[in-house]
Length: 225
Image (tube, rainbow, N blue to C red; front, side, top):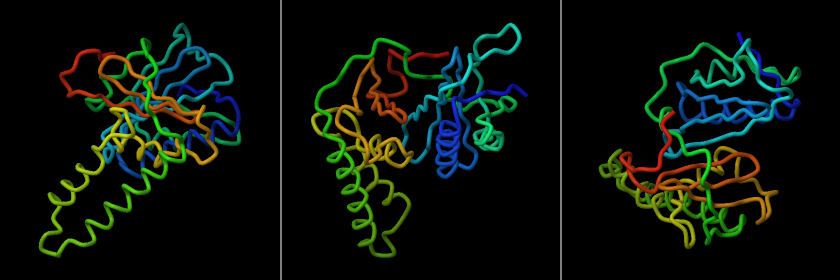
């Protein structure tokens, strides 16, 4: 098994925490790994949010396996988590799995430009909290005979598809960022950024990014790799 040497124990702990959060939303979650040099990008898609989560992991030394100097593989998130050794700051790369459809369509590597209108971090977290409270309140008021999966989904879509501030970013993307540990209370306004490339929007934080497409699956400006 290929072993990845992570930058330090803290990086290993954050990596394990990210995988654990993904598995909380999908016990069968898969992640796509791409490594080059001392950077490892981990892509996952928590189904509850319909977004792409991206975690950058720092490596202690450049990735290498024989003549290969890059890594690009989709693996089980659960199997990957089992290989993480926080004290040794290492992780093994499990056997590849047949990737879900989303793993073949990733955001472009370049061409990102800043987007205006993103609220301050405290306002963003407050917006997410208000949306969660509204969902619980509205669904809690439903009569038992009306509390169907279809009705819960309808209310959820109405709330989470709203946009953040003066941007096109859906509230569900900010909710995903908070739920996955990317939107922490220690962040300042300069730590967050909203950028776009083609049909993609990306909420960047020091702890990870959330990407979402503004158009449907047939949109242009996607990277199939």
